[in-house]
Image (cartoon, rainbow, N blue to C red; front, top):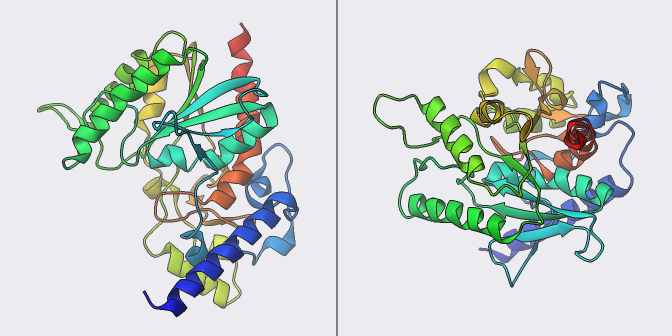
Length: 313
């Protein structure tokens, strides 16, 4: 790679890191998901033309912070230090679980939690074999068994957050059965295999998927000084896939499995928005940006407060 290209990429990444740090410590009023807060409406006209980060810069951004554990290569950790944590919780799933780490890190910081992440791209926590080429298919099956064994060895973890890509290639479908029901059953069976020390499973409902043309549309809107969120909005009905994990939670029942649905911070009744409150929502076609995920943190935390009311009964 030419030196000039490398320097440009490094400079862009450095600039993005500075931007992210500024956004975290001193965000504009109503930035990101706060602009769609249904409880406390917030409007800041100064955000109308803001897009942070840009689509190109977003591709260079990492997921939420997570420190590898040399003694336990299956996990990485964030949040409170072990000796200071009020409790340890876990995040489990594929890359769509991983992109929620930015939001959960905000929750963990607020609640004094230690967050352990167990994620593998393309591989949710499911008993249904994945429709993947080898060796990824076998690796996913092995990882699922390792995850179940990990929870057996860590009875201190009573709360698990799960999320996954909905509407992708999915599970291997037995003859005569539907793909969707196969996936629902795969999640139900995997979660039922978790030890009884896991008392609460919180399903974070999967996100919509932007269109292939959306990043170019956003870049064009930026150049022409248009409101990118409104100009490049796309159909909710066509881009928000039904999430089998949500139906799996309903089958298990609210005594153990509940759903946190934050779609309303990305979409209205008919449209989803690639920019919300000046924050770019999508990193690529299906993943949300770290910048936007962090703005969702307080609202995921608020949803958890509601869910946890039933945990005490």
